[in-house]
Amino acid sequence: MKNLKFPSAQTILLIIAGLVTLLTWLIPAGKYDTLGYDKEANSFTRIGMDNTETLSATQESLDALAINIPLEKFTNGDIYKPINIPNTYKQLEAKPQGFFDFVKSPVKGIIEAADIIFLVLIIGGLIGVINSTGAFDAGISWLADVLKGREFILIILVTTLVAAGGTTFGFAEETIAFFPILIPVFLAAKYDAMVGIACIFLGSSIGTMCSTINPFSTIIASDAAGISWTTGVWGRFFMLVACTTIAIIYIIRYGKRVQNDPTKSVIYDQQQQIVALFTQSTTKIVTFTTRLRLSLFVFTLCFIVMIYGVVSLEWWFVEMTATFLVGAILIGVIANIKESDFIDTFVKGAGDLLGVALIIGIARGVTVIMADGLISDTLLYYASSVTEGMNKGLFATVMTTLYAGLSFFIPSSSGMAVLTMPIMSPLADSVGVGREIVVNAYQYGMGLFYFINPTGLILASLAVVKVGFNKWLKFVMPLFIILIVFTLVVMTVLSYM
Image (cartoon, one colour):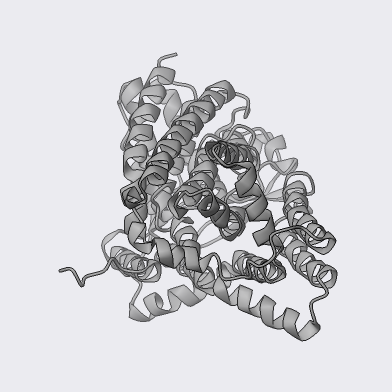
């Protein structure tokens, strides 16, 4: 038994893909009709399995389809993806996925996730270049000296800043870039790598879970539910502050135990391996030269430009990836790296994150199997029928739980919003609670399960640091349970207010 090892992230995802393939043989196939807005033609397009219909872009068209959403939510771009139309679910001829569909799913997933995969690879190349200059090691040495005896400040700052990014613009996939950068800083502060993973991943997860003005979850979900995104915003802000505080206290307590006794680390047996992984670059330079300062400035500027572009310029993966590519080239020029050495270093850096990129693609392949097997809408249809006749408190609890379960099959926050809100939000009316309760259930259910959801980003994040999923579960489960209980209590109280 001692020789048995917990499977790798890739193996876990392939096992999940196999199980989902089997589900397509057991769960009936079905589909809702969808409604999309064509901005150029100023018309709606209703798509069914057998026909496509063009409708005039009027409020009357929406009312006739029982879609309780103001027309301007479509015309001003707030809702930019096709939404499911209520009461249109139909069972279809089964489309069970076979062995060859299972084999092809990772390839299809890699193709579908090409945008984020290229972002990860280019970030890897950038990190390889900055590490080769020695600038990053010099910066880490300086920061370790500054924080000596006050390392807990690092936990508070990183977790709070990442959570702020999550709650405002859905800072999630972008966090992959920060693991190779910040893990050495936490190691220099005498913490283990798990503290760094927790600050970045949990900060992002809690921020997106308690989104306040995030256009990719709160705003699009509220729009699809037919309410203003400001409805319930103060409750979500309270949750953001409370959950972030709970997480920071949890991480600080764990980090203090590790500082006092490194054997208390859940990854103690990997400590030397991880330290070696993140101290491969030269450590001879410990003071800043002008070139090193400029290199670090450009490196930092890449992330500032990326965040500004996403928030203010409607950038997405292509623009973010181009930013990091330009940053790598500029650093190569500033550090006077020879062209051949630059290419070798960049390619090696990208190669270091190739495993992470493949994990992202395989995870996307799981959703490809569900979409091709036509089982996602069936799960949504049966989930929506579960809450009939419930009291308010139970409704809030069950709805949160349902969204947690659905997020395994639909890990995209914006995708979940447009597919489920037109179906789920009217259920609040029949129970006598505000529709913001359903929006909250969507956010909190997805956000909590995101901590451990293997079809989300956790496996890719852990792969950057070479930490096993079992180690993560051992670390995070007490916090996970605390936040579940706290969230369900808050949801129950809010449902009666």
